[in-house]
Image 1 (cartoon, rainbow, N blue to C red):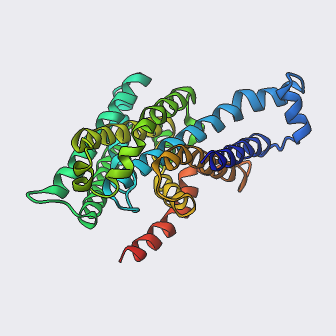
Image 2 (cartoon, rainbow, N blue to C red):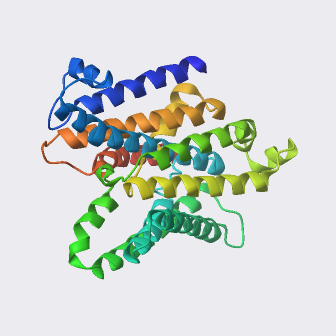
Image 3 (cartoon, rainbow, N blue to C red):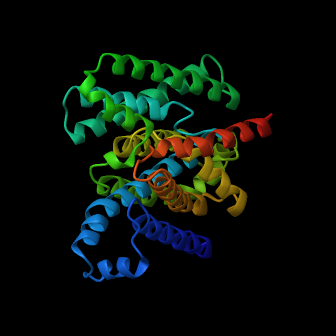
Length: 319
């Protein structure tokens, strides 16, 4: 367990170093080290400390938040296709955040509105999928896709009614763009606290992954644990959406790949998801900044190009 987390930590550090060094202006590693020591040119210090470091930390925090949220949803639903983006949580959070932005609210109220939107999406998806009977993974997945499409229609309507001078920034934010992140620290703090809070429950999550009846028979308080997952997954998704917009499929790819390599022990999967999700989004954002430099792509485009084939492959396997 410790060895796997250490390897992921080293990979995360390598990804951060690459993100700091690469871009429209490439900074050699010796010059990067000089800036770390408090030396180097003023241009390099400004480029690294004021521009690239906050963006890299924001990408890492956002990827970690989405990956942990996806891991929690997959445990709750016992379905590898569960993901905040696919189930409509990201869409609900985006609608809440956009409404707050259009109303001219501050950052804290935008985050609160995004959390309310994500919780509303969670209640809608699970309520509609449950109906008068019990839900199945395929029924829940179909409901999530439909609800996500509904949020997309609401977002389109909001964009149609938005003044033209606000549209470019909102469109890039909706596609997932880390360059619009104001500060990485709120997202990093939420990520660290959430992982710290959920790790003591990892044993119960391992039992819940076998099914609610088995978990109840073994003494697990199933309903409070499920509501904890609902609320925490919504909070993680809302924080990620508030930080960098709607970025899809990170919560789908990362937990599934980790389970293939590390097994299904949540004591390992949850912290590993935070590290691997952050690493993936840092590398994706670096690619988005460099592939057509000096122009930049939204990082959501890169994750979608990775996530759509993965989703289709998992959907084919689940048949």
